Each structure stands twice: as structure tokens, then as C-alpha cells.
Image (cartoon, rainbow, N blue to C red; front, side, top):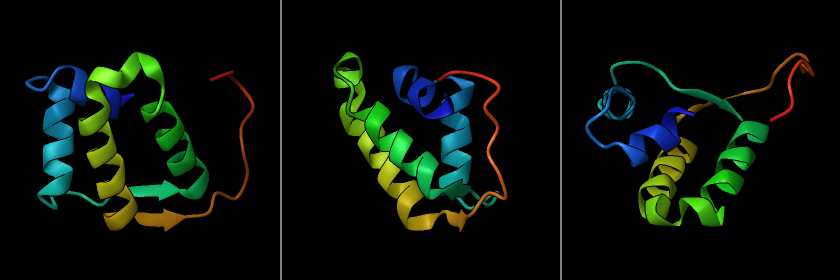
Length: 79
């Protein structure tokens, strides 16, 4: 996941993607289900060291992203 990698490796390309999103370089779109999943993943104990960064990223997305409703779901892969 880009968010996890952005927080895990602050100087990596994933962090640059997050910075570019925050700078308004492109539109971020997210569904309510994905936002819930982001919050659940960010709260996992194994990401405790990145909790502050992940929480801030998820809340930025919640406040700035365009909310979308998918026409359907794909059950091709687990997690």
C-alpha cells in the first residue's frame, strides 16, 4: 500500500506520491469502504511506529479526497 510505504520509508517514491497529492498535483478518489480499510490497517499493532504518519495521511484523504461509489466489487484476491 502506498500509504504504508510512504510512512515506512519517508524518502521513498511512495512518500513523494503522498506529498504530490497533498500539493494538489492530482485528484485523490476513495470509496467509503477503502477509507474504512485504511483506518483499520493504520490501527494494526504492527504499524504502531508509523501510527502518527498513517493517521495523518488517512485523515487528509478523508478530508480532501473525492468520495466515489464503485459500481461493483471484485473478489479476485484476498486482502
